[in-house]
Image (cartoon, rainbow, N blue to C red; front, top):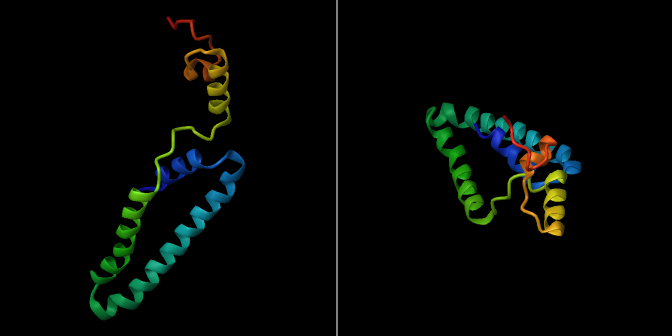
Length: 114
């Protein structure tokens, strides 16, 4: 489910030099969460039925999701990419309208594709 979104957001929030550490923390957190959830399920399931572990594990997840919704600001797409930052800076210096698609493709902004 959410893994592609998580890595996409981490790419927008962290510099390229820091992404390996962030990816490792995300992967470690996933592994710990899966292990913790299975441990809780193995302990609670036989005692209270198979539905109760889902309730116990989902309650903190929903609470954290609401906290993230309220407290975390949505980052700008590509906000930590060096090419994007350089393009915005050069456009501001030249008083030109940014046209990042052409710059990333290596084509002049006034060139049309036939």
